[in-house]
Image 1: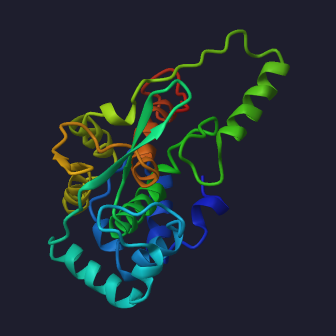
Image 2: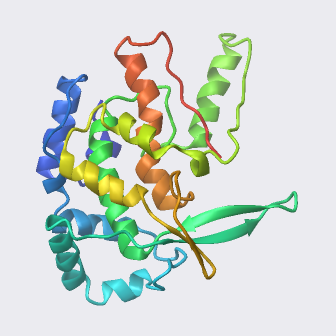
Image 3: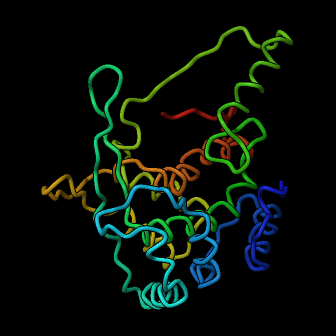
Length: 253
C-alpha cells in the first residue's frame, strides 16, 4: 500500500511506478533506469549520512558537495553512457565482544549515492509487495517495531513458539547470481540490471591487499539498504500472491 513513507518526496514518475506496482502485483518493469536522473541523484546525495566513514577514495560528503551540481551531472553522464564504474570497497575490521572482528565494507561516497538512487527505484516497487508483518529494510520501520508487533500477538495468546535465527556472515555469503534472480522477479530493465551488476561485482581493498569476490560485497550501510529490500521482498511477494502458504520477515545481523 502507498503511505507517507512510500510517497514522501518521490518524483511524479516514481509515483507512477508505485501505482502500477499496486495494480499489477505480478507485473515486471522494463523501463526504470531513466528514473535515476540528476534530481534522483541529488535526493540520494542528501540522504547519505554526512558523518559516514570514507571509502577508498577518501572523499567525504562535504568535499563532494562543494561542486555538487557539477559532480552529479558528471555522474549522470557516466551512468547514461554506461561508463560508470563502482570503485573497490574498503574493508575495515570492527572488534566484537568475543575477541573476533566483524568485516565491514565501506563504499566510496559517489558509489553510495548511486546505491541509494537504485534503492529508491527498487523501493517504489517492493514497498507495495511487502506484507504488513514485514519490517526488514522498510522505511519508517525498525526492529523495535517488529518487537512491539510480536509482543502484541504474544500477549493475545496467538503465539506458542518464538524462533530466532541468525545466519552467520549472511551478507558476506550472498550468491550474486541468485540475488540477481530475485531482483528479476519484478525488474526486467536491462540497463538497471547491468548497473546493479556493476555494484555487485566489486573488488575489496583490505589495507594494501586487493581481492575479487565471488560473493556479494562485504556488508555496509549502503549495501544493506540497497540489496536487503530485494532479498526480504521475495518472501513477502510469494506470500502475498499465494505462491507459498506463509511469508515472514527476518532480522539479519
